[in-house]
Length: 116
Length: 114
Image (cartoon, rainbow over all chains, first blue to last red; front, side, top):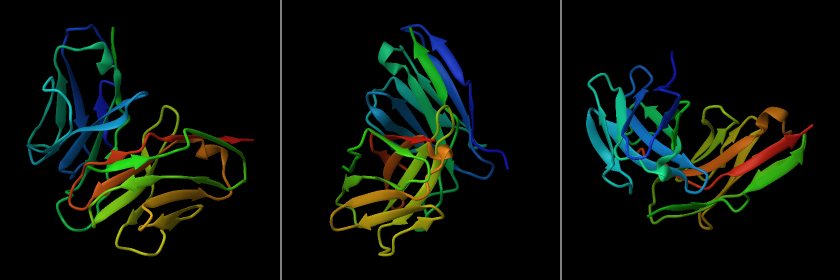
């Protein structure tokens, strides 16, 4: 079974531009979560999507947005990029997460975004 | 809100030694999970071990085991017979039951020396 894939793997953008990152979950997984990883702030939760609906959101400005498609693939968008948005963006997928039992989250390799 | 604290930014041990990574957390939730994730250099984050809060027995996975002290809100990871491939960043994480959001600690960079 293929793992979580993220595209592109590396990206260089200029301040003020916008960017879209993509995440394809493991087949059959319906939940996709996004995280930002920086040396200063560590790993921070951005948002989670389940069945095309945002189920949870972290404390990020409105410039960060996302969506999920009917095939569970997810995209996140950052508008008006700032230097501080330079980070490794990770997505993770899981089957469901709504039941009382535990299901594992699998992480993708990440997209390294550099804002200049 | 939940917080997770890892007080050891870096650790270094010799191959075959045993090492313990510390983690404390704060939460008012009663049902939750705790995890240790491993992020090798330039490689994907993978789950090392998990612990359900309602289980008193400490989780073990081969050379990896945890010491879960619920009252003290402490969750340490012990790696026995350490190997060069254990070199990585290790993150302690919290997740409340029914949610997907992971709250991570700042990480411990572990180096295993030959």
